[in-house]
Length: 169
Image 1: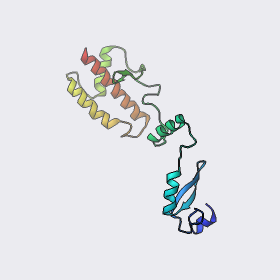
Image 2: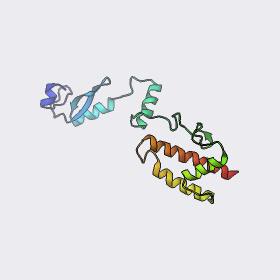
Image 3: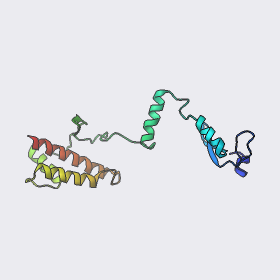
Image 4: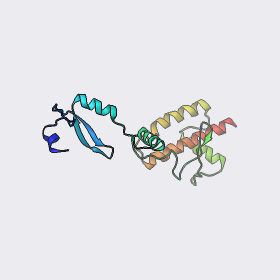
């Protein structure tokens, strides 16, 4: 910020002596360095300003997609190496064999029922109801993103999908 604007905040538009109340970036490469304009000239500036002017179509698309996640680092759901089998809209989202779970179907059934806090005498509606209840409780967006909570959530998803498949048979 130059001394003229720091002290008086006059409009930076040539030959304008009005008070500069509205800030605008000085240029594409200096977005955090501001100039000041009066209301009339900030409107004119905004009509001409194009942040994406120097970008290609792919760069613009990437920038827009990055804005949809508030410019925060993310990873695909289940992209870690402890990703369990489950599907979304019929699409297999990956697989990982959990060494703590035996491949025996009775042990897998017991494990799945215990994850969803159910007993052997259950029906599909109760499975779905309990799953929805527990997922709302343990979802990483609701709880903190700790490894424990993410693992609990993944276990719930795996147990639910196992019980659904078993129920269909």
